Image 1 (cartoon, rainbow, N blue to C red):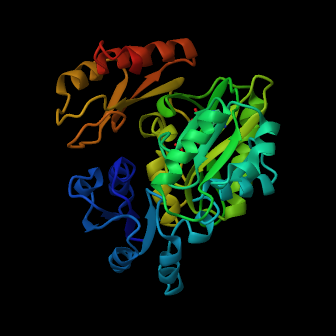
Image 2: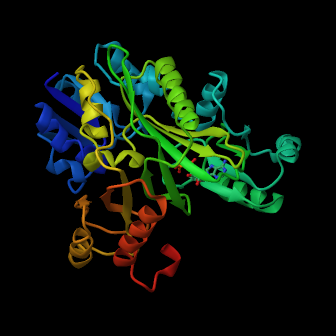
Length: 391
Ligand code: ADP
């Protein structure tokens, strides 16, 4: 495989740029805007929305294999291309059960993997009253499609709020199908994640399990490795193997999980692509998740995933205002932190909550409190002190 097409041109595709050079492949990107990060690293670009299958047909002519940095694609339309011989990795079959959060939950449950209790909701709430009673509030309401970074995820404290949220959301949409799922609120003690990769020949490798910290449902920090018992790490690795084998995945997937107070692991969500929780691997591992993904989709053997430091802490640099600033001073101050590696995505517009870059700091030892202290130091440089809510 010499040319890899990527549907989506955000930071996840951008971070494949160096890896592509390293393994000697060229990248062609399908993305809507000239300002998207990966346009700068692509050999060629098809400017179109990620769900534009006609554009993907053009992309297919320019490359040997197509992969995804964004899964919000039109699978039905792409399947016509697959029938004509276009090679998608991961295959459309591996993506199909995952794109709708309700279908995804059903797939995981049917595989025997541990998930929170859940059910689908339509606009007639009456039909689910008894199920909600069985769950008891708070519950979590999620849009079945196109949710990311907490968009479309609502923690619902009571019946009236649920009714209100559904009314507002349903008014915005015209689809006749049930649009939401409701699931139990999991009072987790930690959120965890693992990046796993499966090669064409079925070999699977996983990265160390990490702790992720979300605020307002958006990932703020990642600590690698997570401070969990070896049997929990082994259980999570086994979950990754079961899932990737069952879906016959080729490429990297991110798996998000909850750890409960009684030590139970539940799967929250599957990202069928590289994932924010694996960014530490760019600086902390011999083979980054981005190189690993390209290796898998190009049919190369998978690389080493061991952490080459005692631990690593990754902090997202999220936008906190509408601006076109390049935040040079803040970036310089963060880059002065020992063992820090700053990745700036080169986006031309900042908006509150937008991922503008990230920084990873490598530590000699595994020490959760120290990692958190470093993360807070980075955040105190990055966010203006007036924004105490964001810290
Ligand atoms: P997204 O696709 O937007 O990332 P997620 O399902 O990962 O949505 O939810 C985002 C965050 O919301 C999670 O990381 C977690 O902090 C919180 N969350 C989601 N589902 C639950 C749940 N069932 N119980 C408790 N918190 C949840």
